[in-house]
Amino acid sequence: MGFKPLANRVLIKREDEVTTTPSGLILPESAKEKPQQGTVKAVGVDALDEGINEGDIVIFGKYGGTEITLDGEELLILTSDDILGILS
Image (cartoon, rainbow, N blue to C red; front, side, top):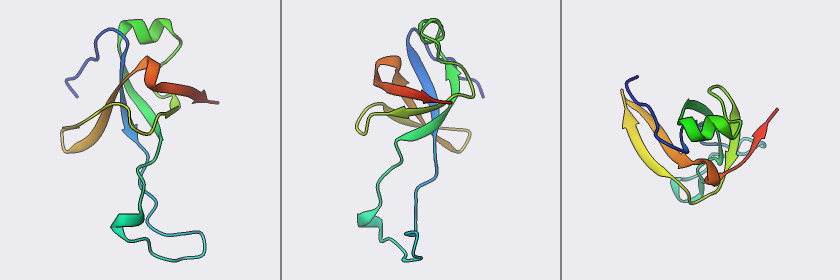
């Protein structure tokens, strides 16, 4: 991948959307919500200083970021301020 985030920006691969409920019901498109969790793919220099690293699984705000497509993969660019926490 040829993308390097600048400053405090972070490139994230969002987790897959849930398409069924735990009981097996299939959700229609109108009922689906985009996951607020993903894996960090690339990190800007300032975000590294804040302790965010490639491979981290992070939780982020519902409406933050910019969606892009690179190499056929849908990704999200966020600032480190949009990241609420890192799962351990």
